Amino acid sequence: MKTYFNIIFITLFSGIVLIFPGCRGDTSEQYGQKISNRGFTEIKDVLTEPEKFSGKEIKIKGKIESECMSGCWFNVEGNGGAIHVDIRPSGLAIPQKVGSEVIVEGKLFLRDGQITLVGKGVEIK
Image (cartoon, rainbow, N blue to C red):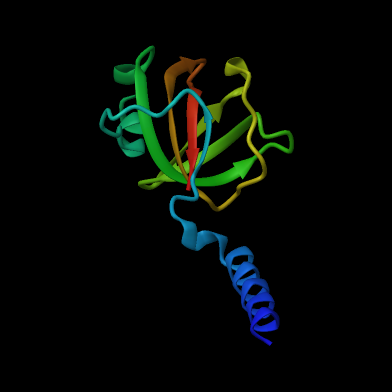
């Protein structure tokens, strides 16, 4: 009888662990280089003065507003605007995560008036 009870208990406990994976700690996903401890650059500041940040390494955070089907680029919305992030040059791609919180670190480029952040590291929350 005791063995039968132990089998039921272990089965139920295993089921609970599988049902609630979010309870096991940090569930963020990392792609590419590890995100540094540097401070964040506000998206609104980049959109206001893109020349100031062009050619520089920056870190932004926001929500993925749209994404290509292959996951090689996406747009990050935050602070009243959006920045286009291209991760293909770094050999990266992410799964479909529209609406997810994201942190991106990389180099900002200004080409023909278009602002693009070439991401080297991505963390999705």
